[in-house]
Length: 263
Image (cartoon, rainbow, N blue to C red):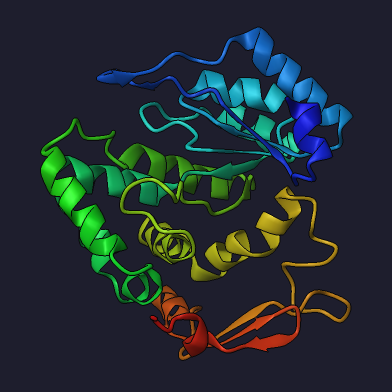
């Protein structure tokens, strides 16, 4: 499967080691299969990312040479020694705090994440109403772990110099691709990280984890000029990233209003 994906031109391989929550478990990937996936990803020179459920999954991902992991450990804190192993291996850490926020809102039957301005601008017609109806019809669900452990682990990882990248788990209910990353950055700042660290995690660090830092992630001659120009200063108020004024993609100015027009 990894070879087939490589031949199709994918840029990376993602594996799931997480076994779910105690109230919502699912079968975990067998260790031998994960080892085979990691080995073949290395053979194909594809970065491997891993969704981890606990410290043991984080350790296994690091030992397998994963480029990064998301979710990390949401119920148990990651020990400083394991964080140091991640730092030494160069593996990236992505807590995906917004996915926890989305899980809590789903458990409570709330749809606040759909009512943000940027989401309402970019959602396809009918998506917000259909999703809100589905959430209300589903009723209450078991809540995910409190985000306190994940936020604490994120602060520890930052203090120990672990490579940090932002990610969201978008595609799950209440989380839209694109808009979710802006909320994730706000949650990082709320967890105590400086805006400059958060912005680097969302740009250059992410490019490093994807082995693309030689062409994107920085404003530098020779790099792809894919840029968001915003009204405000995200170094002072991280929510200013949502106040998008102009978009450039590889040096070409994008007609953003045209992209968001509804037929």
